Image 1 (tube, rainbow, N blue to C red):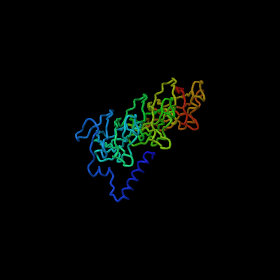
Image 2 (image 1 turned 135 degrees about the vertical axis):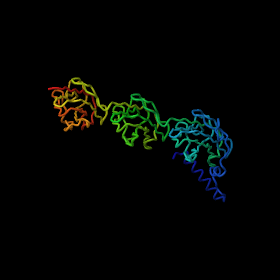
Image 3 (image 1 turned 180 degrees about the horizontal axis):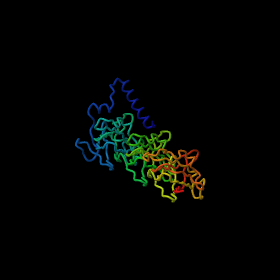
Image 4 (image 1 turned 60 degrees about the horizontal axis):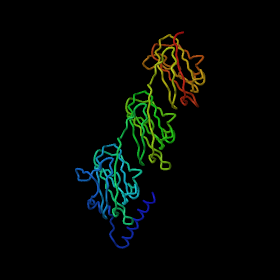
Length: 405
């Protein structure tokens, strides 16, 4: 609790205690408002069907509290899942032109209390108050001024109020950086990606922790598939993704939802603010190799494997070569590439496994891995980098196969 809120609560307690000792029946101005159906409105612009002034998105509305007991009421039409930000310019947090010390109560027409206490929505000039609309409907905002020892609804002065919004989801375009920011405590930003089963996806972050030095937020991601699969259920699992992106294979066709949050130090996740950028790229489940041609490729993320397909003919001999950092022409950086080779399920091979251990098919620049196809069909070659274990390294390499004896 900040010092200002502490003194406000202490003042209310002292006032209540004094009234009780004096033999008075104590009832707060907030309770009076609830019993009487609310105080008069004086601020706002525009209008609504209920007669409550409607705020215009992105525009400041000036208000004045001119007497004790007065509250100003405003409305916003909201859509389910959309994120809203409410700003206040007042004497406590603003541009120095306002004289009232303001707080807000916020309710949804479906009965949801977004904020049931003036103390919960204050100091909203630099960091706006944010919420997700629980359903389509109307938000009602009640504004009151703080009057010191007298408490809420007993202050006077001038202020201004504004709201903005952002959609529930932003669609990420493959390969394009999305510049974004977190501006309020409790804010998370959501993105959607349409994915195809088996395709590999890479998610990059440019932030204060790992980036180009231009960003200020320390970001983490949660990632879920629309089929219910949790790709990452913890912000801690997807961080520092500038040089090494986070990668995953889509478990099925559908939509991936990415939730981004900023780390606020001792306050934890969803309590930081700042700027960042996010990007998603992809590669197909399989790349087809051409007989006798080197294919240059790379592993760019821990846990990544690359897959290739070759159509083989029963009785034909095949030789697979690798050019990597361990054995090659000196142009590649992957520490050591290893391969697994297995027939696809629809090949109907009696012996589907050619090689099921990366360590048995590596160091293949001078002496290739050679086998004779036991049946006609399609084989899948999976390539991984070794670094303290298989599938834990990154780097560049090249792969080639040749058919015939």
